[in-house]
Length: 404
Image (tube, rainbow, N blue to C red):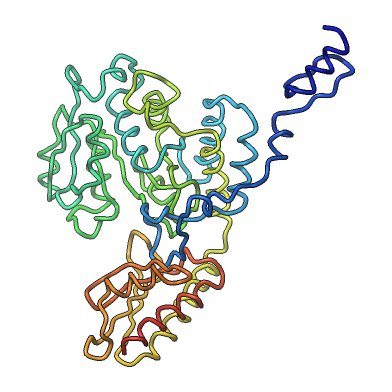
């Protein structure tokens, strides 16, 4: 190409590589940086709101810290082999959480599916390709306490595993047989079941049966990140997008190294497996690690005091309305943070919780709360930005005063 033709070409086409020793290199990123920033929320007419409800999936869970967003943005400009990222991040997460090994999954649900798949298949590629068809598998059953057998059990049963219900330790011993592949424990239902962690684990270890525990929303306290690994559960599954404030679509599977290795073979980037659609990208893996690293380094005592102070601001404001009463509780297991219940005498405050929730949603700014009963609502503060407690206090007080 002649020099004049080359100059003409470069004037109309983006340079994606060095064309010669004397020609400057322009990266695709440099070109992108000149594009005007778009406000897609405004452009699409989407409603934003103050989240006084909690880390619900419908409410897009939590907001990521700046260092998590930075990790996502920085990694988005590079190609990295996905297996290498899982290796390195898995080592770091395992060290933080006192586990043999770990991997980032596409949410806690995915961790439950992939962990169960790993238990069923091991590293047998033929079995991996066969799931959820368990024909020919020697072990096909999962033992669960009756009180734990709720909708979350649909995650492990995606693999085709059969649920066997028990209620007592005696029933558990009798239920164990050559088809028993694993024993599953739902931490949220701990207080509803007759068999607690230690007894459950003792029986499992006696019969050499792998155990899995679901602690999806059971952080805080931060110590739960390693408590169940130290207790002896073989697999621990946790959500990354709730209180840890990682990407909402990320989760963590941690535990025995051999089972994590098997779980990874049941996941992307490998094909012919049950987890092929449970893809987690490099940005999410690194973002999840950044979030976990940030979370464990927080001053959790100070954080708790901040939550209590925010609750007090809202509680003080709404109690100025006649007929309003408040109660502060702390859920014992999942979503373990101060929960404010605001109730009212409908003879004095003439509004239903449905109408109050709608008024708060349609207000400016929009506020989301959770309805608890026809005449009470629940508010959490751990997802509020600084200063939003005062806004929530004012808005709830205003709406209650209108009808009192």
